[in-house]
Image (cartoon, rainbow, N blue to C red; front, side):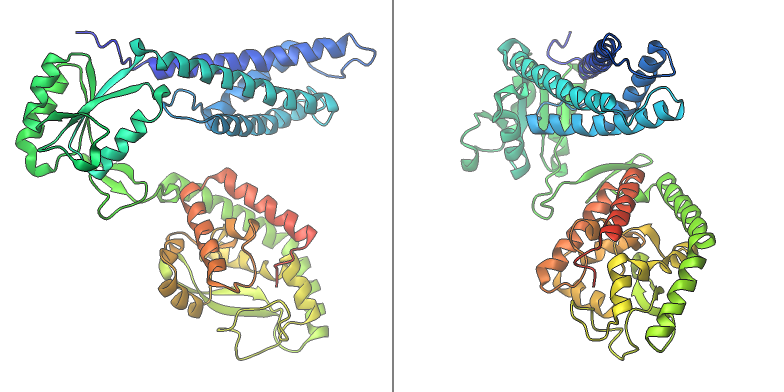
Length: 470
């Protein structure tokens, strides 16, 4: 029996078509602009043949698209998501191709020509993908191309799944109905087809059904197993929908340990050994480079000015909570007068404990530079959630749900929350809640590229001066 409604290669084919079209636009647009420039009064200066440049652009775009991905093949995707994905791909492409073209001295990437090419490419790719997406939606909306689905069980998850599949006519799915012990009064919009024992008989008489989503409890294995066996032998795709809504209300993630499946509450990129190793290697290399080059100069300058402006030591050590809530001594340049409240009271905007020199150090992040020693020792990372005082951790862990999640990774000298507006004094509880949400977002979305971006934003903010840095 041939399954005409589902082909495993279908999504891969769509992705291949989209990327092929992207490459044609990428090369065709460059060729058109290049030809126009060559025939103008001011030819484009370059040191490589056109074919070398086009090959370089093609390879760069393929690499960046593999990283950014294609989302048109997904059943439910919105136009703004497509444009954002194109923007991300084009930004990666401009950076990678710009570096290669400049390194090989192929082309002046700081020219108006290259900027115009990148801007026009973004517009062209966005238009192409939006048109392709609209065509794909029209194709999927045709009745002859629908994927027919039945649901077994009427738990909250299956009801929500029904709406995900049925509310968008262009999703490519049509739900025939659901099976349960009795009709569910909360599921009136979906046709009731009978009891779970009647599923196989229904599938035999309705051979166009090729997708089945089951959310029956495991204690009904005597019903579930025969359904699975029938589906496996008759080209019906069987999916088990776990009923977690009674205690989990957020997205979960499927993982495997050997042959044992389990669900996690969030993606955790830094739990992977290769990502840990990459982040640690960068931390060691970067901190060693800084401590052996610029830090001695900074230390001499800070020491002289600090000794001239206030009594006491140059360095300030304070216990803070780190990875897995382990305590460590965080090292900073001292920016305040020696005081008894250093370990309990957060710095405020017009804090009388600060000196003028200390205020300058805080606004430019100079006071944080000794923490590269913490990074080298392994207590901290260059990028991560900022470590808090012990007193604050104790207080906020009782007030803010999921506050302790931020301690699943090493704390950082800088972090996502700090470069997105959550730096400085937390005047209200919502300020700390926003910071914690930012820290959790970072943990779930970590990538090496994100760390580099946060470092760039931190340096930029330090040069410009931060109004919340006090």
